[in-house]
Image (cartoon, rainbow, N blue to C red):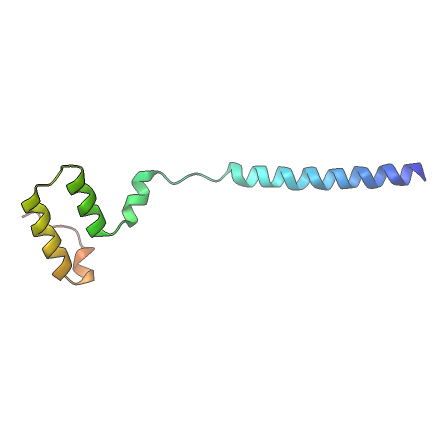
Length: 84
């Protein structure tokens, strides 16, 4: 009877170690998303507000660009800016 008890404990321990190792390996391959990639999905108005808050734009530039973004259709907003 003693051998049966130890084999049950051994198998139980084996499966616990197996699942813990599997979880550790799965999270080991997970790579965090850098902040620069997160900004790719940011709303254009939020990007504009962030740049204005950082001092990259003047108040006049901010107002002009915000007005242009608010009246432009959504498909024009995602297009690349012209070199004007």
